[in-house]
Length: 343
Image (tube, rainbow, N blue to C red; front, side, top):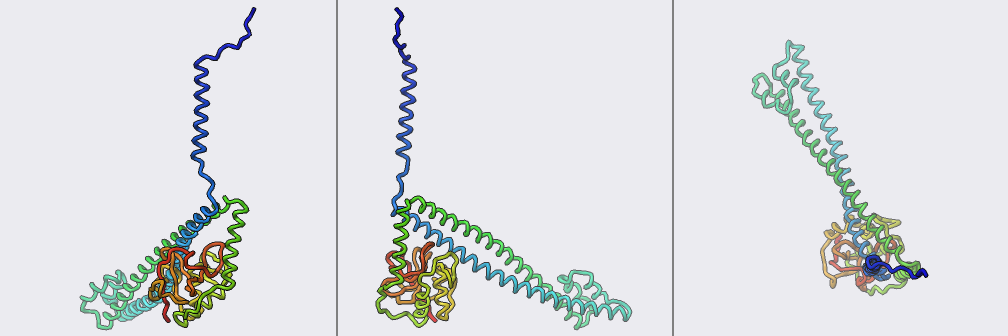
């Protein structure tokens, strides 16, 4: 009778199957171990806050480059106008030399010194021509004026060329900073998108509560302002509560942090500089215990600035997605120092 028993699996086959199964199990275990746990809402918020801080640093650098670009463009325009005027004056002086040559020609021939001038480079001509006895004092004076004007013109053209190169470098820097800012903000948005709809709503509600609290009653105490300018700047900034933070914003519809402080002091009648890196030098530095309403207050290695409002509160434009509002100094970041702007 034929046997119907299944033939035994060879030892080699069983070993291969067991090996593959074990390897798959190890791989799955490794993947599970390496899979990063989903960040909590508080962890996402901390990372997003850090990215906003880095974006603000890049924004300050962008704003600084933007200011430099405006300054360079103005200086270049002025230099080019000056070069044009100098060229006109040089052409007029040269016309005088030409008239001198024409007069001599009509009198019987051009003086060798004048002829030399008309055919040579005027910049080194004077050194050759001044040794000629035939030059009158008036002629020598005319030639000196031409030479001086040409040297001035060459210097101004060189200066304009350097500024144009600086302008090109500044525009390149602007592009880099703009890309950096967009990268930071995009990364922050990607993190926010990783949260559930409910978590995102919770964060939005917290932001809304912070803004409503600022717009409502905030205890600022009864501290006297640092000066009438400080009081006026603080009052002006308070009138902007609720306006959105926008990178590069200088008012009156939106602001970044230093844009708000510059606008506020401008309304008070004092012009301060545009970015945090220069606003730190727009007055006298003071410590936390010396702060009075209207003083500038700097945080996070001077990357962020606001106006001290009294009672430990700061009036500022916080970050993307937020609005101009009061906020406790203890929640903004690492305090650096204050600056009292004097009129």
